[in-house]
Length: 188
Length: 452
Image (cartoon, rainbow over the protein chains, first blue to last red):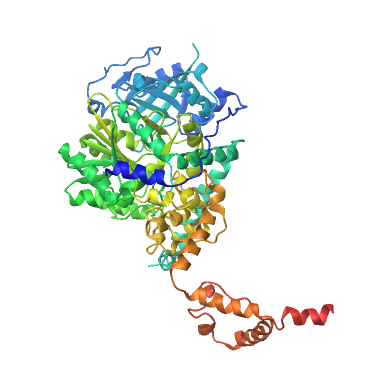
């Protein structure tokens, strides 16, 4: 017998009391979603900025390797998306459109459609996500209702920059992934 | 070696063990603070527990559904009855791709299967990419905590290690500097690896997708640059519906480290164009545990580590004292299921205070199961020093005359006996504890004099 069948047989031979699957209620969030979202992002060591601040960030740092996939943002982005993600190793800034944000924890939903190359939000040195503030939802229950049966090969809730506290519990931003996350909240 | 013997080793460095104790308590405190910001926190714990009850009652059906949907999405599904078969499956995938170097993100399951030494014996270089895991891998140690693998080490030791392995400046102990050195080192490994291995936090039966949650982004750096992604998953990690993720993601990071969510929560549903995803579904003792009515709930665990952070024994004895892949309270109820003889001292490494059960996000009755394992183990094995003294005490308390006489004798004897006898090996209670000064008279005598 294959391992698959022997594992399944073993499980079905065990008498476990049948328990129903609970329904998940809609839990309310009483606070202002925009304020809560900004606080959550800041708690995760990200930053919420506007379009002017984004332009300043790009100019002051004189980034030369910038990819922008967010269509509503007009900035000088001089790199096109390569075929192979390995070529992104020295990418300085990636600007991506987020689908929606979750106020309770700052998580932003992205799929293949937004990233094009799945490595993009991780391999870039700095990450910028553009998000329409009208898309904010309260909590993760509403978030998954919103995702519904959307079918994407890869989906990501991203809530901050890469971080670690593995050395004596000292928080360090910029472990293996992006060293910073800026969220540009728009209201169009 | 028993838990208590290894705990004594850990306690030899008093400053280090005090730091360990306080640091984990701080993490527990952060968990408390953030959980109190969610009014429905207790309701979420109930829901999570009920969802997992349902999973354990219908595990076979959900596994078949998961397999069917994953295959429909182009994922290759493998089944392994034990660690050995799991390791062989992983190796055969690597051989098919002529792969001799892999990157791996945190996976307690692959630790459980001892995948690293197996692959290394077969000529494969394994690089753990979580910072804490890379640190312990350099030291040839296992992780001492499932969420904070290097919590037993101080930055001084890591600085010396990185000086040796990564040529960092001698004596530079700045965590940011050391983390950056590891970033450069690991970046190079990510860019070269053709195969990346990850664990799995949740597999969703309804969609055939699976989730990997990290803060460092190391799992994603590995899999999106590699051609092949192998995800190793214990069969109990299945959840029925996508919307159940809402419940578990709200609980997981808050329970683990007191943060509202991990910064990266990746949902893998199908491979990118031209790439491959494999899932290895592993039993390795899980079906046996499911068959143990009193202990099956231990399979609800989502590996947040909250029970370790709160445990007065774990905090003061360190992860290595358990000698098991998963340490702490949850490890002490899971491990005896794998090897009751080897892990027989673990259920006794507890005060049964119940704090583990109080913080568990899926409401596993951990302290009750610790008690139940003690019954099983005591039945199966002989006596120890504590049980001999307990038997003597039982005889004394059962006979009023014996109690009266022995009380008077002990009050007299304790005054004259040298400490070497009072605190001899037989008095296990007396280790690191002082007996109170013995009173002049018994309570009974005092009562007669003053109240009658």
